[in-house]
Length: 385
Image 1 (spheres, one colour):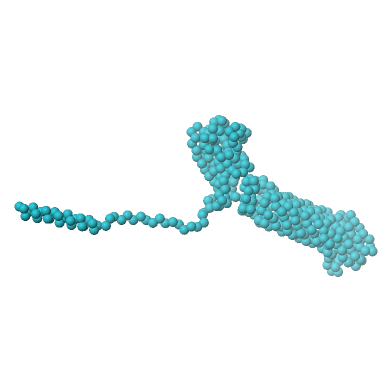
Image 2 (cartoon, one colour):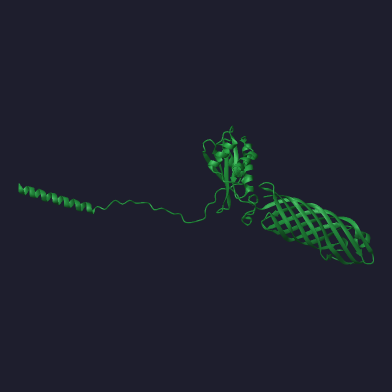
C-alpha cells in the first residue's frame, strides 16, 4: 500500500514537472502588424477652381437646397481682408438668391442691423451673432461666409454658411476661386506681382496727332523743304501677353503741309489726306495702371497737292509714301467691367523720325529724311481675358 502511494506521488511529480517544461518551450503568440506605408513627399494636387461668378452661383444653388422659398433670408457678411471684396460678394449673393425667387432682406436693413451690433459686411460672424442678427431682421435663415487666400495654390477659397435662426443649425459649402486681375482689383490691389497674368485681346478707337519734322532734299528744280502735321482717327487692335503688348492701328485724316522749293516759291496751309498702318511693340508692368515704353513703325501714304502747285513738272500729281519710326513712352490703365471684360486707355508720347518719297521722282531721289518730330496718341477700347 505504501509502495503504491509512493509510486503514485512520484508519477504526479513527474507529470507536473514535464508539463511545466512543455509549456515553457511553447513561444508566445506573435501579432503581425502590417507596416504603415508613408507616400514619398511630392507636390500637392491643387483643388479644382472656377471663376468668381461661377463659384457664387454654385454656392447659392447648394444653399438654396436647404431653404424653402417661402422663408426670408439675409446675406449678412462675408469676411475678407478687403472690404471691397466683402461688399462685392454680399451683393453678388443677394443677386443670386433673388434670381432664384427667394425673399431677401435688403442691404440697408442688413447694414443697420450690423451697425447696431458694431459689425460690418466684412466681419467674421459666429453662430450666436448670426442668430441674433437674424432675430433683429425677422429672417428665418442667415448667410455668412469667408473669402480667404490659399497661398499654397495661389487660389482663394469662398466658404458660405447658412444658419437657421430658430435652431442655430448650420451647414457650410466651399468653392475655390481662380486668382486673376479681377480678383486683385477687388482685393484692393494686394499682391499684384503675384497675380498670374491672363492674356487678353481687344479693340477700340485711336486718335493721333503728330509733326513729322522738317524734311529736306534735292529735286531737279532746287532744294525741297517740307513740314507737315497729321491729325487722324481710326481703330486699333491689341494682344497683351504679360509684360509685352502688340498693337496694330489703322487710321487716316487730314495732313497740313508747308513746303518750299529754292527759287520757285512756297505754299502752305494746304490740307491733304493720308492713311497710316501703325505697328507698335510696348513693354508694361503688371499693375492696373502701368507705364509703357517701346517702339513702333508707321507706314503711310498721302496726297501732296502742295508740291503740285510749286513744282508740277517734278511732282506730277499722285500719291506720296512715307515711313515713320517712333520711340514711344506713356501710361496705360485698365478698369474692370466684369470678370472677363475691361476698359483700357493708353496715352503715348513719341519721338518720330520719318522719311518720305515722292512718287514721280523716286528714281532720281529715293527719299527725304526728317530731322525728327513728335506726336501724341490716345487709344481707348474694350478688352476680354
